[in-house]
Length: 302
Image (cartoon, rainbow, N blue to C red; front, side):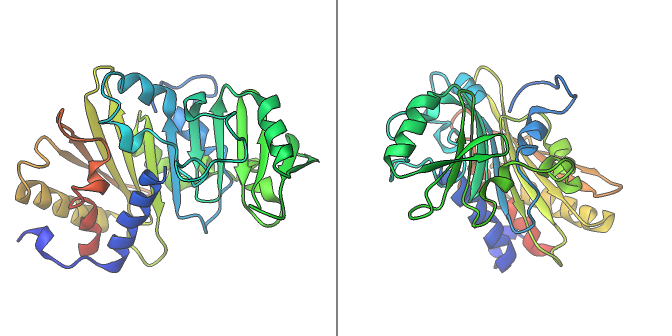
């Protein structure tokens, strides 16, 4: 029986919708230093918040490298998540901040942390002229505009943090020791499943959903060959086995759309199911939640 013929469950539709919004609203490298992957180091910039359903990590410097000569194909996954960087409304930094200045980014709907090379003096000058005021805060000056956007910023030459939280505005990007997303066991498990990726989009669901965290990662060679890694952190081994069977069924039923896909299961504490899906030269990275959503929709049948 073809999975695509079934009516999807509302939770599955919501999962796909949230991730699609994150991508349209708009990594690689080995372990170094503290032994954490670049992905986990990125997640370490955000405080754990169970109300946050969607998180996007992007190694923008890496995607610029792998997409050289074919930027259009990678355009769907090349922009940081979050609502501040979009083509419809200029940010409060005026013309002093460009997306190409961001090397890595981790964003939610309301908060984020970017690393790169920034003209801090020009950006803070623009914030000031836009009505933002400066105050002392943990990690440096905090710029706030309570009368308009409600977004608070911290700006330096190599880092920008922002948050739209109503109280203690930058607590979302200044996590206390042991309380970041990188300390969350489900996010750590998902990062283990994804491996070395230049982009990762996470979607958290609420109980009693048997898949508390899902993630889509992007890998690419310097020649632009892209592979998508779909990871589901599930509640138990039984759920993992059912999801494994559903994914394999879709791969077979939808041939040749997902040809070359490898589905594996990692059991134990917080099991995960992984589907590694190669893209062809004509397929745009991000297709698993943009057009070819059948693998995502398997959660509707659990």
